[in-house]
Length: 243
Length: 243
DNA sequence: CAGTGGTCTAGACCACTGA
DNA sequence: CAGTGGTCTAGACCACTGG
Image (cartoon, rainbow over the protein chains, first blue to last red):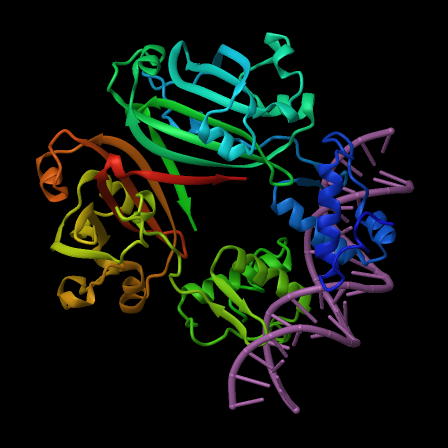
């Protein structure tokens, strides 16, 4: 049996069934970003369809950002390339107008807790690991983050050596837990700083705050992370393209 | 000569040349949203390529949002369907939780002026028509807007009967001036209200404000509108999807 | 019913990569 | 150089629309 292709709803077009079939093979972790998936010709023979149909199926996954074509070489899984940094919401200009510096990350807390209501609602469980960190640009604190991930999917996260937790979590999710973040939704609103946040960001309680709530999903659209981040509203600047 | 197809850079693939060729015919206003463009078979014969190549060219324009396919009927120009309302940045909930009401628009000013610096920079000219309006949801003022459009492209806009200026400007640009807004970029930041804005929005001077600066472009990527809109930061809520 | 877009085939040749 | 994806052809049949 070829992995759900012939088992899928036969009323659906072949390229859809093939796309879904490939998608679940990706979700199952059959391929890595380093080795190409089978060539179009190979897939065509394997699934007994024409190359054109394979191309249409692969096109879909490329559009979704799951695969990447490299002419002359092959088609590869795209790792968590996915530029989703929360810094994109803040003007990353140096005061002197020079190039933006590298973001740094200071771990403040990491432990298993019962999820607060919003996180539990988003993740569908209240057994989570909580991560709190402060993110800075050239020693200026910019973002205060609370992150919640389900314990079930991230077994052993708490015991990871601290240096392994760089500023980028999504590559780490992928390499240590096989969790590939495919998409996320960010919700931005406006509020004021409480004592804790104000102290961390070195602003005054009551100062205006931009608040970003994010839910991240894996390939199978299961929520795998919820976070809430705050930064001074004065530094907030976001560009949205509409088509 | 078939409209730049055979005149284009022959090193480019046929489907690219065909796509650009169709795109400029659209920009020239050869088709309306009511009548279909020539069928795929017709275009294939006209341009002497295969139907598959026509499909790939049309696919590109459909992805860009310029065209719309209707199976069994034809392929049509998409008017300014384009949901770009600035209200999407604000929580459109009624206090009683009912469905959102219809936005209304109150015209405050409309006249030819010299564009302020930011508008002139975006539009590439300082000969503009300025429109000021207050936008409300069920009699609550929500957004205060200043809009600038180049006089050259909107000859006679000032003398349009006032009732013609509904809440939606982009359909009006299209129908009266043949200007089709294809894309826009919105830039969001936070600030505080000055006297004028505060009075219009019925808030206090110094109250926090969400500020949206928009530049809109036509099919040929020429900027054709610049606007700045302000609303209370407390009502601000924006959802961003990342893939 | 004729005409449209939607799916699919079985080839061909080209441009590019990497051993 | 063999193998990959990128372009292109000339058909076929299907599903749907509208007169």
